[in-house]
Length: 591
Image (cartoon, rainbow, N blue to C red; front, side):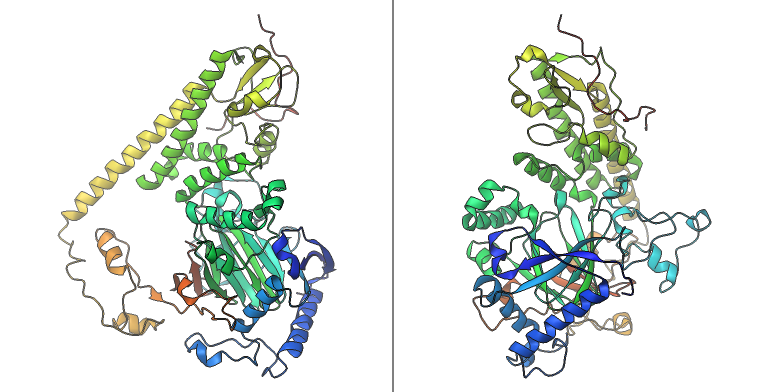
């Protein structure tokens, strides 16, 4: 907050958020000047609309109390601010403009989290004397540097697929910082490549979140609502939702049959969004947040869907999905679970099967295979680094902007344009005998990758069956038989002493999970229900009914925030890629 470095804000016209127009530049601010501006705006709004408000700050209900006790029209409560917000956006009750400090590069500016000294974050350091030390003790300074809950670390942690991406991508594996003020808006969107996201609220006023489940049906339902209201705009800008400049009321989505969840995020809390889930919201006053992406192994199928989606309207992906999955297949030792390995195997089979079939079809149609005459650099499969990313940028399909990772079609008429195998007929109007295919991964190489992954999956299954069989015959296998349900108690967080004394109710699904893991050595900790603070706005036309409250649980963990709120919106080669162009200098002419 003491830094004098300025960042650029975006100017949001709240009364035009439903139009999908781009945001103009706002003023430049230091952290201090922005928070002063934001505090002044909140104070002016309070004085103008809630003159009888008691106190200077937003009136927030206690989490354990009944919200109806605080539904006070005279006070600036979350419920009333939600109503005010949608009056501004939907009804244009006032022409209000706010400044939003969004997408601030934490590499150039600041992060609210310290950087790792054990090589766990993209921009951290790796001190050899610390790498092999025991994990830092909870609460220590080093703990916050090295914990997976540090947003600088989570993209690169052990079970995040993004650990293979060794180039810093802002907002993906390098966090973005956000400075918000009253009514500043993060518009409806889902994450790049349908990744998971995690958002931490550092300080300030609460934030209102809305979310749509990440099923294909619900995501397409939201897009349909947008097309109904912005048909002309989306005809000209088919990837409008990726511009993150449009905000519609949850009421409109629900009228279109799209389920909507809502949750209020308080300082010290995380919100996690799941693959393909659309989300949006607004700030209820001055605040600072930080967010980044990550991906578990079950994300692979969502990543494939995102890749196909982007190809449909010629949008370049932030990284090559084919390269990432091939890199994962080159690190099979990291696949320790048969179910997640099968996700990878299924995706590899889909991509390689299409690649080989289209390759054969094109060659049979007259496209020349010049792989025996030219020597292209092999694809690097050890990691996705800056050199690899730069090379991929030179082989984007001319039609759909897909990275041509395995092969591409080119023509004598151009030394720069290539196409993927799907769209070779869009490349140019030249006869087919002028076109040739560039191959970076041979058929044998791809089949070997596929077979190695298949064998690894089979080995994992066999080992898991042996382990289960051994545990079933173990004389100590009496965990489930000795389990007794706990007595009924209130479904709020209770102390560790109460947990030890079994004075709480098992959360829904706990019995099922206990039975599922009865042969595992991992203890099942109880997870309790949590009051989501769903607001019933004074104006029913603008609020989301309480029946749409998401499944919110408060997990007690040794994290920096202590409380985590989860929102389910439901072999390296010696070849290098330093060429200025991917095109070979000399292509043999057709004989």
